[in-house]
Amino acid sequence: MRLLLVEDEPDLGAAIKQVLNHEAYVVDWFVDGFQAWEYLQNKWTEYTLAIVDWMLPGMSGLDLCKQLRSQNNHLPVLMLTAKDRLEEKIIGLDAGADDYLIKPFDMAELLARLRALRRRSPQIQSRHFQVGCLTLNYSTHEVTRQYPNGNKQVNSLTIKEFQLLEYLMKHPHQIVSRDQIINQLWEIGAEPVSNVVAAQIRLLRHKLGEIESESLIETIYGVGYRLNA
Image (tube, rainbow, N blue to C red; front, side, top):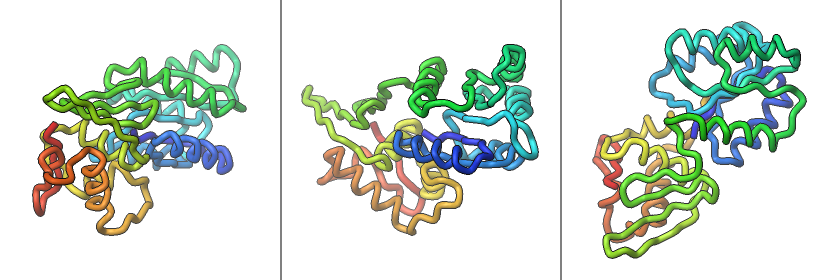
């Protein structure tokens, strides 16, 4: 899952990003509201959740939420702020925030609130995500493959393997290019080596039992990859 983090406190932003990376989120971290808004206009990038600080340079988190909702964008937003008065909470929620977390906070509570936002969103699976013969388990980072004879194969995935398979499963029977995969699974500013996608595909095929054939994850030469689940 890809998450937008907009937080101008360097230490807090770095701490949140580290925790979220450990939870298999791809995190784009911005310290300026205007810059975050520019990237939200990028149609190639699909964000699952957003964590937005209220007080930001440039565009405030409050105005960022208003902009999102004015464009009918339903991206779930968790608002971070030191403002703890009831009337301020109401202002934040009315601006379009889905939840509100007062600073300082514990990272365990942050993760719990993100899980709650995922459960409330109809577009996001909370625990399991199934497409055809494949089921992802978000709690254990495992994939289960169901065979026609009734047998099941369960494998643990690395964070990047999990992210790659989730992206392919969200676009079944569609050709996705290397550039699309790089854009979605590597954070802004990252410079992965040229063969990183092909290498991850090979590892994922091995985990899925596709050693002898490439029928499940198909290579469309010169174009990209397609999941035939």
